Amino acid sequence: MGRLFSSVGNLRGLLAISDEQAGTAEKGSSGDGRVGKISTALHEATKYLSFALSARIVPMATIDEAIAILDQLRKELDGLVTSRDQSLDLGIERLARLTNRVEKQLNDWGLSRDSLRFRNVTFERRWSDPNGNFYNEVKAKDRVLRVLREDMAIHPESYVSKPPPVQTASSGPEKPVSKKSERVFLGHGGNKLWARVHMHLKEDLLLDVEAWESTPRAGHHSVEVLKALLSSCTFAVIVATGEDATSQGNLRARQNVVHEVGLFQGRVGFEKVALLRQEGIEEFSNLAGLQVISFPGDKIEASFYELDRMLKRESLIK
Image 1 (cartoon, one colour):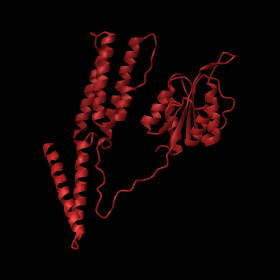
Image 2 (cartoon, rainbow, N blue to C red):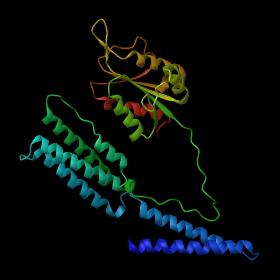
Image 3 (spheres, helix red, strand yellow):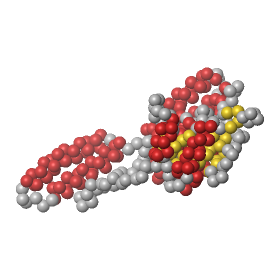
Image 4 (cartoon, helix red, strand yellow):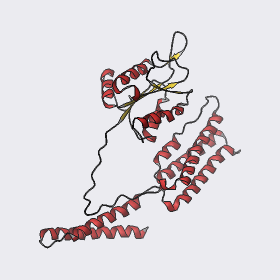
């Protein structure tokens, strides 16, 4: 590694000399462009080596090592639920520290999204069963590492860093590629399940997501806010959960959720509005043409597969 740092330093010194020579050649009449080509080549070599130093994705040579580390971390997780000499409080503290170490390791490998998924993993909770909740959380975190390990073993090429394309003297500077911005509106009521959808859209799918909570809206009239959202978003995901009781004793979605469904239907089209509907709540009076994806109880992740299919169909994700 010391030699690599030294090589970069030497290259930077050569760059300074070649740039000075290039400037001298430009002032004279005998410059034939060779100095400029040398300077370009040295710049590209420096960029490549700098990339090699800063890359934090798992190199191909250490894939087996990474898998071994994941196996060890999974063994530690299993020990948290099989150990007989720890209290629940001690187990929770050990899990918190293990979570920090796993996050650091994944971030060091450049796997920030997997790190975030490990931290915020979802699992079944029961208010009256803290021991069961602890067990479920440990197993859910283990599931994240298990799937990552399996994918790393089957597709090692996906975890190998690739250097930037080399720019030749004749190719000229790289030109930015413009891409149309696609923004997704996320509408919801008071149930916190919407936060899981937000994380899936933003962290897993890397979409530009806009919700009421995205920016401070104090002092702005709700009508004006909705107008701005309608103008800036090209797709809408609406989460409908049972929150308001009807006169018959049933549960229905908040009225603002119903209102947002109708607004975005009229603005972006029926095919660009996805309604994630909690099973058991009162159905809307007119669902004709609306894409309804149902999910049981609090398991909103069950709707993600069909939601992703819709997003692919509308070319928001590949």
